[in-house]
Structures are given as C-alpha cells and as structure tokens.
Image (cartoon, rainbow, N blue to C red; front, side):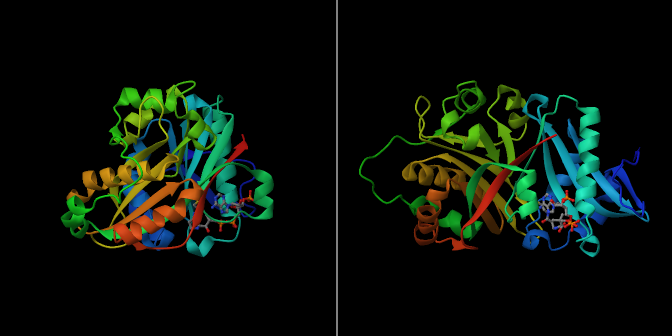
Amino acid sequence: MKLEAVPGAPQDGDLEFVLATDKEFEEIVSMSHGIYGGLDYLPSRYHSWIGEKDRMVVLAKKGGNVIALLSMFIVDGGQTALLEGLRVAPWERGRGVAGVLQRFCCQLVKHRYPSVKVMRLTRDDKLTAKELTKYRVIAKQGILLLQFNAPELSSRLSSLPLPPGPSCPPPPILLNPDHVRSVFLERGGILKDLLPNQTVIQDWQPFQALPGNHDLLRRKSLRWMADDLAQPRVATVCTPPFPVPAGPLCFYLNIDVFGSGLRGTKEQLLSHLAAFAPSLPGDVKCQLFLPPSMWRPMADFCTSVLGFHLEKGYTEQYLLESDM
Ligand SMILES: CC(C)(COP(=O)(O)OP(=O)(O)OC[C@H]1O[C@@H](n2cnc3c(N)ncnc32)[C@H](O)[C@@H]1OP(=O)(O)O)[C@@H](O)C(=O)NCCC(=O)NCCS
C-alpha cells in the first residue's frame, strides 16, 4: 500500500513511504546487518509485527529500495504510540532520514488513532542535548548482559543452590493471568508503586499499568513471577527465548525485574532458567533489566555462582516520552 507524502519530506523528495509486507524481509535483514552487535531482535519479530493489531510498520524507500524502517504500536488503551525498530541503512545515516521517518509516522498515527496523546520509546544510548529537549525521561532500568551455554547450564541447574540467607522465604510464585492483572495492572495494582513510573517495561516495550494492556500482554506467553501475591517485594517477567543472528544456535532470554529483594530476584531468575534453558540448543545471551542498585549484586551472583560470562559493564535502558 502506498502512503501519501507528508509535509517535511526530504528536500530532494526522493523518499516514498510504504507499509511493510513479508516481501521486504530479506532487504530489511541485509540493511540491518551488524545492528546491536549481531543481537538484532527484528528478524525474529518482523513477520508477526506486520500482522499485529494496532501496529504499523512503515518503510522508507529510495529508488525502490528500502532504506529505513520504523514501527508504531498503539498501546495503553489507545493513549500511547510506542516507537520501535527504528533503523536506517548504513549508507543513508547522518542525513536526517530517521527524523523524517519519525515525523511521517507521527502524522500517520494522529490521522489513524486520534486518541493517542503521547509517543514513547526505549533507548540505551546517550541522548543529544537537542533530544533532551524533545523527550521527558520517564524511567530507567539497569541492563545486565550475560552469556551462558544452555546445555551446559542445564546439566548443573539442579545442583545450583542459593547461598544460605538469614531467613528462608517461601518459594516464588508463578502467576496466572488473573494474578498478572491484580498484581501489575489494576488501578491501585499491588505492585504499582514498585514499577518504574507505573510502567511494566517488558523486553524494551513499556506498558502503563492499565487493565487495557492485559489482553495484549496475555498474547505474548510471558512467564510472570512474584515473591508474594498480597505484598510482593519483587516480581519478574521473562520473555520466551527467541533466536538472534549472532550465531546459528544463539538465543536471547530477557528478564525484567521490578521492585527490590535480592534473594527473591535470584530465586525467580533460577526458576526462569530452569523453565527455559533445557529446551535451548546452544549459547544464550541473557539480558536482565533491573533497578540500578541491583546491577552489581546480581552481576556478582550470575558470574560467581552461576558461572555466566559478563558481556559488558553497566548500561541503562531509558524510557522516553513526548507529546504527540
Ligand atoms: C540511530 C539511527 C536510526 C539514526 O538514523 P539517522 O538517519 O542516521 O539519524 P540522523 O542523525 O540523520 O537523524 C537524526 C534524527 O533521528 C533521531 N534519532 C537518532 N537516533 C535515534 C534513536 N536511537 N531513536 C529515536 N530517534 C533517533 C534524532 O532525534 C533526530 O531527530 P530530528 O530530525 O527530529 O532532530 C541509525 O544510526 C541506525 O539505524 N542505527 C542502527 C540501529 C539503531 O541503533 N537504532 C536505534 C534503535 S533505539
């Protein structure tokens, strides 16, 4: 489908904007080569994204070839547009294409979804001074990137006890969809005060703690845990592993941590690992997104007790917002 040109299109007027289809997949993959050090999530999401309800994946083409991509996903009961997947072909970078595509997509969202009030995005790179005037920083989480070999870990998992603590808390609870609603999403939800700015950030996607997001989150087959149903101190959500292009057998396993409580976090991490590691064939890049103060103790636990390899030092995930 062709989309009409918008004011603000590049001076030379040689870009056209189209909605993405399955046909452009190979072009997107080759354009994205090397992004995120070979850990690009887009190849594993692309086909489901283009058919997803309330999501638009827009491509910028030049001379008939794809040179940029951006997705806008409408969440929070129609109040928020999530900006995701932004990428510009390496040979077109530094010429403002990203800005032009973003402005086009914002216009499209305003036209199709007049209820949208704000645009949100997550990033892990430093914002320029100009960008800091464009966005409000809504929340931030620390990023702990680790690597392990799944078959090797699986052979050791049952003999990996937690170091003894001062008390022995009850085991973590695997949440069912009703629990997820009451703990995370209901007005005054039990965990609401522990979430970063009342937002469930699930694997880079921010969802406000609103019941309207329940169905959407339910469709993702996530694994949710908390240390307690009535008064949780810490809760986690694990995204099912998905392959990344870094190697033939390389998977990403991403876990978001909310609240505090080191022992509870370790127990929930072990439970998620026990649930997923045995089905994985090779290396796993594991990303933990967690409150910044938990980064160091969790890094120590994962390297010295679990034997994981620390892939990089402390970095941050920022949740940004601007008015539409
Ligand atoms: C980051 C990337 C998309 C920037 O594209 P670009 O066309 O070279 O960017 P330019 O510097 O020419 O354009 C700057 C505009 O893009 C915006 N921009 C740059 N990086 C951005 C980012 N990571 N997220 C959102 N907007 C970004 C700037 O705010 C600026 O907007 P303005 O025109 O309103 O001022 C490109 O370098 C790329 O594809 N990198 C690899 C993938 C990647 O890191 N994507 C970011 C995902 S969060």
